[in-house]
Length: 221
Image 1 (cartoon, rainbow, N blue to C red):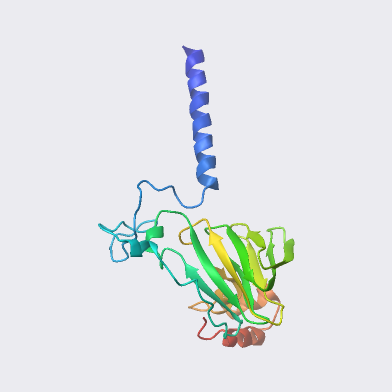
Image 2: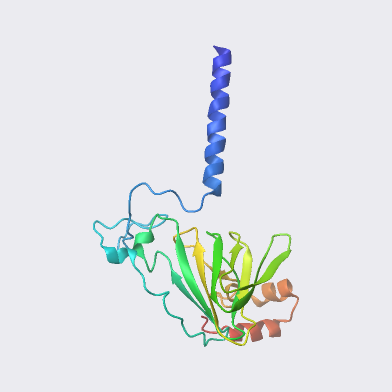
């Protein structure tokens, strides 16, 4: 009896470990029904969105990635997301996309996606891309039309168009809403502001330099 109980305990522990590993390596939680089209008007707040009572094909459609967007901002790049906020039918499906358009010299600045790994496909042009590990090792290369590059979940990464013409890429994510934190804007455009003393010490610059950088981000994005 004791031996049987011991084997059962080992089996239970193994199941719990497998379940924990499975949950830790997955992205969004698994869906529990065929579809759960997001109901943005529901007052119930949860990890995701409540399901609409009825839906149509338009809840699963988005044409926003078909055409290039002007990249005439201070960074020379424009990101067009296609996540659950644009496509309610993505709710619980664990996937999303985005288009990034670059002008000559355009930069998609260092940022992270806290909830997703990203895989990037170059539509046209040439990009210098890279990510930085937690050991501060940069992994980078140049990619061109038809190439793919992957950015691991949560790591700081970037893309820059060093060419003389425009470039564009399509990104795919294993989350319905990967989230994005642009490092510079997070620190220098936060509201209420991060104190000058924190930023000056972190970057080893003066308070005046901190204020000068903050002023460049006024009204961001």
